Structure formats: C-alpha cells, structure tokens
Length: 295
Length: 299
Image (cartoon, rainbow over all chains, first blue to last red; front, top):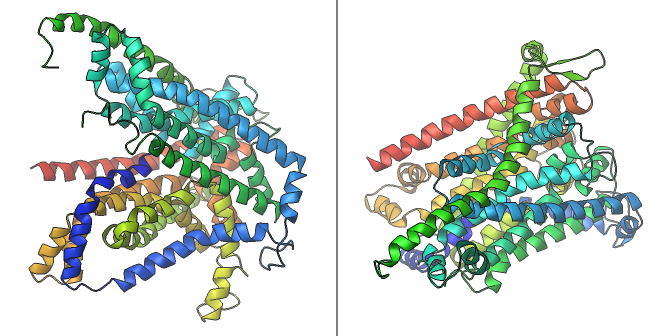
C-alpha cells in the first residue's frame, strides 16, 4: 500500500536526521512537552476502542460497561454459533479467491504497465486509479447495479468478482514501483544468454518480485476479509460474509459475541499486516531486490 | 548496455518488438476485467440516474430527469448540506489532530519514529466496523470517555455524544485521521530541519517560524491529507448509523436507503452521481492547487 511507503522510504535518511537532532539538542532546545502530551493523548484514544472490545470479549457479564470478571463465555458462544461460523467460512473463501485472482491479474498488469510504452498502457494506468479515488459506496452501488443488470443473482460469487476488481488496483499500485525499480538490463542479459522474453520474465523478473508479490497477497487477503461496504452491496442472502453479519448484529442491539469475533478479527488482521511488513525482510533487508535494482 | 558490442544491438531491437507484444498481452486481461466490471458499472449508475421505475418499482432505462430534479427537494439538499458540513469539519479536526502528532513523531520521534508510525497504521488496517463499534462503546452515555469527563467536571449527566452530530463527526475523525497523518508525516520527514534553524537564527520566534517556514513547506502534505479524508468521510454511512440518530443521516445513508429499503434505484443512482460530482469538484480543486504549487516550485 502507498500508505506504508513513507516508513520504508524514510530509512536511508535516518543517520542524517539523528545527527541533526543531536545538533538541535546542542542548542539546548526544550523537549516539546505539549506536543508529546497531545501525541500521547492521541495514542490513548486510538487504542481505547480496540482495548474496550478486547476487554469486554472476556467479560463474564452481558454488559458493555461493567466488567464482571474474566470468562471465555463469548468465545464459546461464537464457536457454537453456526450462522457466524458459516459467515466466517464464506469470508475466508472470498478472501482466498480474491487474493488469487487479483494477484494473478495485478502482477501481469503491473509488469505490462511499467514496461509498455503504448497508449493503451497509459489509458490502463488511468483506469487502475479509478477505484482508489472513488468512495467505496459508489463502487458498491455500481457493482450491485451491474450484476443485477446482467441478471446475475447476488451471492458469494458476486462478492468475489467485485473484490477481485477492486483488489487489482492495490496489487498494481504496490508492485508498480517494485517493477520500476528492477533493472531491465538483467532481463536483457538473460535474453542475450538465449532466453526468450517470456523465459526472462518467468525465470528472472518474477523471482525478483516474489517478496513484494507475497506481501501484497497477504495484504489483499486481510483487506478483503475485513471489507464491509463492497461486500454489503454485492452479497446475496445466505451465507453472508462475516463483516456484513457483524453489521446487522451491531445495528440491532448489543451482542457480546461480537466482541469475541471482533477481537479475533483484530488479532487476525494485525497479525497479517505484521506478516506483510515482515515478508520482504525474510528475503533480505531490501526485499531481495538488491541484485537486480540498478542502485 | 553501452558495454555490449555494437553488433548485438540490431538483434536485440528485433526482440524488443516481440517483447512489446508480451507487455500488451500481460496488460490485457486486467484491463479488460477492470473495463468490464468497473467502467461499465460506473456508466450504468450514470445511465440509471436518468431512468425511471415502472409501477412495480422495477428500474427502467430511458431518459427522464425526474430523479435528477427530485434532488432539489429540501429533504435531500438538507442531507447534502449536512454531509458537506460534517465532512469539512472532519477534515479540519483531522488536520488539527494530525499535525501535532505527525510533527512530534517526525521531528522528535528519534529512533522510535518508525515504530510509532507503524503503531498508527496497523490498527487502521483492522476491521473498520469493529473499530467503529468499539469507538461507539467508548463514546456511549456511560462509556469510559464521558465517565472520565464527568469525573473532571467537563460534562454533566445530561451530556451526550452518541446520537448527536458530535458523535458522527467523532466517528468520521476516528475512522479516517490516519489518512491525514501519513501524508503529513511524509512531508515533515522530508522537511529540511536547517530551514527551521535558519528561522531561529533570524530571530523568528517558534510561532513565527512555524507559520512562515514549517507550515508552508508541508502544505502539499496537508492538501493530500485533506483530499484523502474528505473522500471517504463524504461517502461514509457507518458513522452516521452507529453514532448519529435518525436526524443525523448523511448522503451515504440516503443512498443505502434508496437501494435497500426504498427500492428506488434511479433516485439512488442520481444521489450517487451527486456524491461523485461533489467529490470531483473537490479533486479538481486539489489538482489545480498542486499544479500551481509545482509551477511555482519549478519557476
């Protein structure tokens, strides 16, 4: 995701900034107490809702305001709730299919977009940006109308199709910069050694992209699993994806089981995001791109 | 490339043309998919906005401006005005919160700054509904926030956040403040600290230095953040549903209602197009602004 880029892009600047901050401290600047207090307050409010959901998922009472003692009651309720379990299965299936489909199409698209210099390429590049600047409710409404217009009954399948469509953009955005960072001369070297263009892509380029591809796959899985708006507009009657089920549950009164499901989902997505951030490290500090990037 | 013997070049150029064909083939499935499922569906919304419904409420294609004209109904303009107001307010509050946070982390975060930014981004990827639900519990009438405010005398027993406009904006801010922090952090990270030092050397106080040096240098980050927050805030319907009462609905709730409860698809499509129009105006303003900035920078 583009959102994550600043963190990694900032890495090379580190020593310089550290040096500067030392020189600033040399000028005997006060620590900005007010700023640090505001930031601390922000972090407290950011994590408070997550902490509340987690805490009350272990409540022995039904209340959302009084903590009666530690219990696994609501987790047990979830494990015995067939409706929620079938929704969980549906969400897992949707995420897996959307992940596979969007990664396949997205990787090919990213390669084509970066290397192609045709007019079709620049047009496709623009189309790719549309989902990123369109609010989800609009894309949700639009997908639903398309399926209904084509006479397709809304179901798990339509959610899969819609999720693939909007995940392609993410995969492409993540991989475009990676592909652009690859040195095309290595591909050319492979071709000078007798490989065809396709063999060069398959044997040289794709392995170099593997860490980024895996990271984006994990990210898409997490995003699709958590997605609500698109799923809400494109799902059929039964069995609905988990987030749609949660939506109807929290609209109609307090159900503490949702705290348990929510906690599991929070843990799951945080774990997956951490994994996505960690994958490139597994392949060496710079995502295994050192060998091939021109830098 | 230059190291290769010259004789190798024509041969490779011959290959490059077959290569170009490969790139087109790679690009084709994804592009076709996106055209079929995305562009076609967006066009369908535009077409249905000028359609009608038959006696049974089924949508019919045609050219009828009934739904578009219905948008002028005060009931809808009021909702649109409220949505705009809430979205703009959300943008302003997000900026006021995000600036000090991004500034503190970028300039005073030291070796913890990557960890701190990750600590902001990671929960953002957690399920939106679960986060919003947790936030609504925090803001509820006997939730932790109001209890704390009552304890220090900032609120009394009648103070409510949930089911008010304050609740809706609080929900939108919680949902999207990350979109403001990230571009601001990126801008502040790139900021040349020696500029601030120069400001100080020229006897500018911290306040003057901030307004004449730091803020102008990071305004592009702020502009990007404003767009990134305005876009989803304007289209959101979860916050108004969970944190606002029935009299706090936003345009997103209206659209949702027309498609699910009201079953008036042409009107829902017209509302969707109206939402898109508002956002496009916002995007256009942003692009003009950044282009002007770039033109000034290159002059």
